[in-house]
Image (cartoon, rainbow, N blue to C red; front, side, top):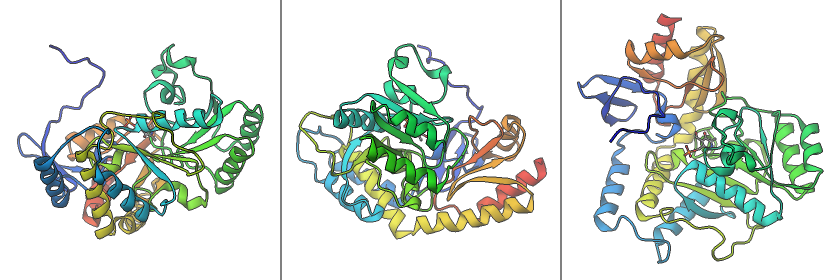
Length: 372
Ligand code: PLP
């Protein structure tokens, strides 16, 4: 049987990984400052993570959401405490798109409306409504295009109010630091006012923290820098450090009802163990502080090479002013460093494990200095 060929692949085959490094079948070491699209929050093979998951698997790996699973409440308690969002309520899913799909659905249930507002260069997933809300026509099928979506310029408050004032929008969905698009961030004024406009027009404000959440921005969630209170917060990627787990945090003003949402896999025992391990390591190793400190180090090194930095915390990009595709190949094949690209082809994306150290960035910048 052939694989359905949708991914262009680099000729690299990781078979083992540890911390910020992965190793191919010949034992060649690669520095991973990309974390497989921002997934590796606490690094590859963290001993606490491995122990928690293996112990959990030996006890019970899965049972459905029809029975008691106290691990889910343990995640909720720990997540509430570490994020400061303890008044919200947690619903588990298994991916970023599923988190956003459920957030949009919930917004529609709660408001009785159906139109979505999203922003240029945004990315929210590949499922029904999430891909319709994603600014990339080439991945939107005619089926997805049936959703009513307005894609506005990020930062355009006038257009936002004009759209919301039609009173037909269930949700505004936004990444506070754009990931796939290329690390653009709007202003404090825009985010605050967007949140106020949502309240005025009975529209739910959804913070897509799938990539920026779980400490990556240096705060637990990127929106927290702006002093706002979204109606729904979505999470995935770094939440499970490679185990497929996601979730939504729902403001208590939105009331749950039996059957309203559901999932087979979401919140299973292994998913909870992975999330608990991530939260425990984030706290014990003070990784949000490390993210803030390493951002400073990154900016200093970039400044020495006159490179333009975008993003925040350890959700960073270098806007190099030319298409970075060839450079990424050189970094992988000649320097053995994994980096990422973006929709903005001039941006090299850097999304390392949150426990990255100075020496790792030094290796990256030595390679960049040589190639640039
Ligand atoms: N939202 C954002 C901001 C993302 O960056 C992504 C994935 O890159 C998604 C949603 C979709 O997540 P997943 O690929 O887990 O479905």
